[in-house]
Length: 534
Ligand SMILES: [Mn+2]
Image 1 (spheres, rainbow, N blue to C red):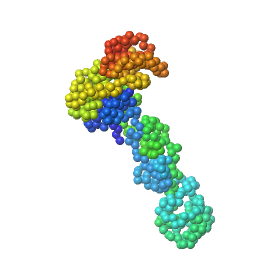
Image 2: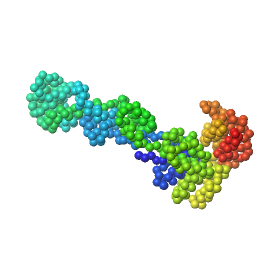
Image 3: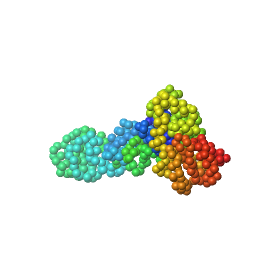
Image 4: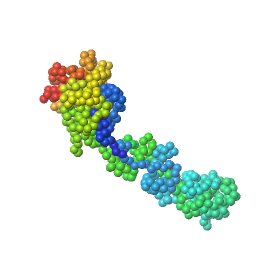
């Protein structure tokens, strides 16, 4: 199994990060790379509106960069039903070249493990132990293991002892014994008279009717077999069912296929089995050994629309970053190997992805062209934001001329349907698009929401401030400044609400942001704050 490369946007995904992930994943696929778009959080209503419009499913939610057992190659679990004989178990081990069999019940549920060691022990260990096992062995197993036929099934209880005919036959305790006899009917009569439970008759000898009649009246089982007495004795102990010699699962380590490889590795170090069962809802899905873990690869990741650790998947160090496509400041990510790191000062990541299509000489599909259009419309406030560049405006032209898209109509439709804060929960407004920064040692979080009508902010002003203060109070680690930015969706200015210990100190600077018509968090607000904090 080889895993796809995951193309992921940032946490709290915005439209650009989802659209660019989808568009880049498709480009990679068309270039022959097994890539799949993923996301690191819930899509916002705007993105959902777009995907719905384009008839696309949400990308898959990637929750960890670590691999689980179901994402790496493991071995087939060779299984055997618990009632099977240890002879069948041995044959199966030889046939499949394995030392371990996983035992399942009638419902195919995993119940234990039997190793070659467990099987050979039966032949080597003290007969007293084996006798107890043989006592519990079903009659059908006894017949099966000697390729025999049950001529009559009696009721006598078995002791577990196996006896042959010898000079001292009449001195021995034959009560409940399994007799292995040849064609001597007088021995059969004697054994039955002394209370044996089973007579296994060698070389297909069919006893006379009166023997069968006697068996019926004495409660003795008669089995005949093509084997000779020597072979019968050799085989008879192999009739023991696997369930009697297996180690039950509660005494063993079992892994679930959703467990992480590194946790499995740690658990394995505590024990020294050669392989372990992997289950899903009590059913076996495979067998895992140390070498499976050593051979397993890390998850490969392409980051789009972000390049900072805290904006990416939590355990990113467990994965392998193979490429970054972004339009934000360079952050703190380190890699072991050289990678393609494409960072450009353009309005959206989708803009860069479209360049990559052109560089590869591949025309975007209609759906990808629309994804790219929505991505850039969303990220540049329909080409009005200060982050918008000539490169973005050229893209707009190409989308209109070469792909026949009406970007203004797309933007109107999108914003009218999604850009409103009216009726939205405060929690949703505050946390829908949050970015955290450390500036001059201060923890600052900036939330941004876009809306058609900024006047709505007046109606919620006091309540929203109260809400922000409450939220801060409940945090273990408070921000020095929490800033909520309400921005007109087409870039016609913003309104600001803020709480935190820096509020007083920064109040006049932030008021100026409003006067100066700041709309870009990245290009205007963050640099503005940084300057005010120097
Ligand atoms: Mn972006």
